[in-house]
Amino acid sequence: MRKRIYYLPGLISAIFLPVIFYHFSSKKIDQLNQRKVVLTISEPDPNLFSKNSFVYLKYEGHFPPLRNYTDVYLNDNDALNRKTLEFTELKIRQIVEAKDSINGIHFIFGDKCKYEFFIEVLNILTLECAKTYMPKDNSIWFYNFPDD
Image (cartoon, rainbow, N blue to C red; front, side, top):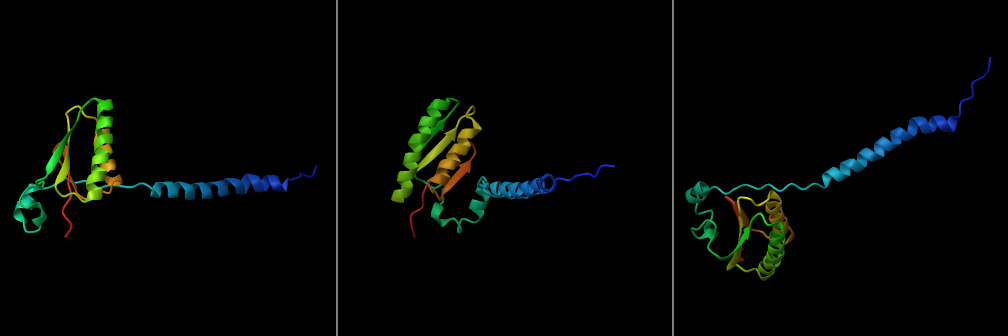
């Protein structure tokens, strides 16, 4: 009878390399999953505002607060919407940097506007460090409060 010859490096490769690969790839996948950011958005409740108006003194009785709002209409024209959002991104940056509490932007989403533009507006507001904005019905109101 012949004596079987086992190739030791081949056995090590066949057994341990898949285990090592699985271990390090699962760590990398876990790192990628931790980078996801979730933004919680809730629509304001006017009843809460009217019942607890002393909590919302900065609103001065108006919900959303009175400002000189620039109305921005977003509809089914993707090219026009993208150009409009580029313009409003600069305007938001100016309002935030100047800490302007007089002006604001009112984004109005038409019936045929794509959901991606709603998300894009939220991304712009987050990237430009906008502290106060309010989604309400089919629009988003962006404004600043004066510093205390």
